[in-house]
Image (tube, rainbow, N blue to C red):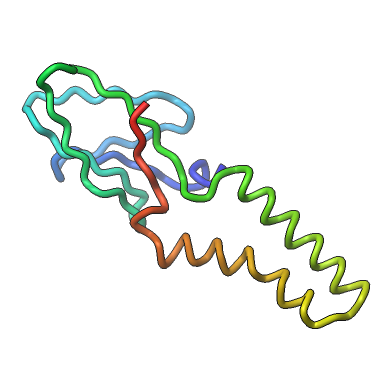
Length: 122
């Protein structure tokens, strides 16, 4: 869900840039052996993946996000639940606890930026 808001691009060998369409496959023809592929949105990036064409001539990858859809929905429900508890009871602890998912998501987005976008083999 979060990847649909970002403008994701694939960079091959540091020169060729291919925009990744949302929920559609992208075919990249590479004419040289051992190309390096990096996925980025401009701020986040993956580690370079070097492809070796000894046996396989086609590689399939899936671009994912460190914050999954289930994790995002659970975090929003957690915020909503503890906000309602804080509103009803007036306890300061519930008010502070409702910010934990926001802080966790910000940590993953800004501090852990090398692992925010992930390139996984299919």
